[in-house]
Length: 320
Ligand code: UDP
Ligand code: MG
Image (tube, rainbow, N blue to C red; front, side):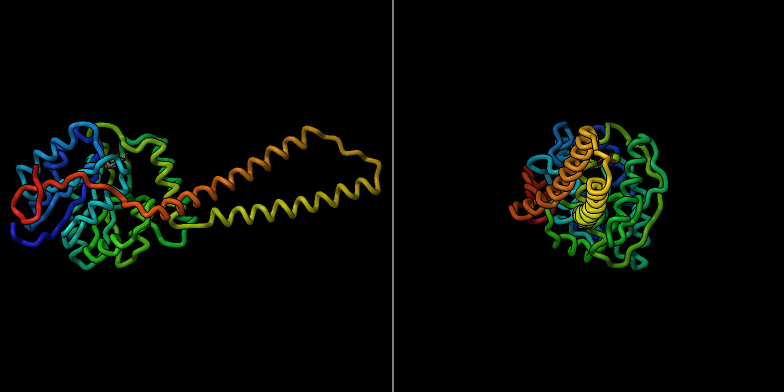
């Protein structure tokens, strides 16, 4: 395979032994139909099941398969980043391993890319087989994020997208540690367009995005692209101080000019609880930002690759 690689397909995998055969089969079929050179770049994000053995096996059989094996689970967004770092294609496609994103759509993306677009993202018109809770929270999140940020992050799009080499190179220059890749792609800019699709059900296995990881991703999305939450503290503080001041005037008036006495241990406690709650929430928001500054200041590498596998056919490869 001496042809330069035209397409790199980046596939983050975490405990996907049940789907990985089918993913490999469908992706290979689609990519072969392009008639151009491609690489399937799997990033094993610290799977604990047989995923990695299966992939090593494929690497031994098929020179277009490459595997980056992480030393532990670093998370979906980091796995995508590593894949992009190691990709060599003129166009890079990021796709989930669970076949929720139909590989056949890649052909449509390539079509758009050939028309001159630099980023082609896949917009979900429907999501099948996901819980009501997941769909609603995702929908709310995308709209909330939209209202919080100044850059245009397209609604209802995941990380399934095609990037031109130059966009991918720019992305690789962004060194932030808590990554929200789909937002970063919007931030980078270039000529972007969408293709629409209906998101299928996961082929097998269960979602690797429990609520906790979803919350982390949403916080990364918001804090990476907006500091409006920090301003919120200032605005709310001003509003509270102003109303407090007016209330003070009322109390003074009552004290000086009337005989009305103000009772109320309970009302005091309620106000006390409300306001200390409020202050703690704001401290929490600040904590989110400070934690991220801390992450940046440590300057640790984003991920650690234990091994890279690819069938012998190129010079600098490893195979064990
Ligand atoms: N994934 C990963 N690391 C993780 C969690 C998920 O690499 O810590 C991969 C997973 O194998 C899949 C993709 O990221 O290819 C999307 O995950 P999943 O399908 O579980 O998310 P959902 O579609 O439920 O949001
Ligand atoms: Mg999925």
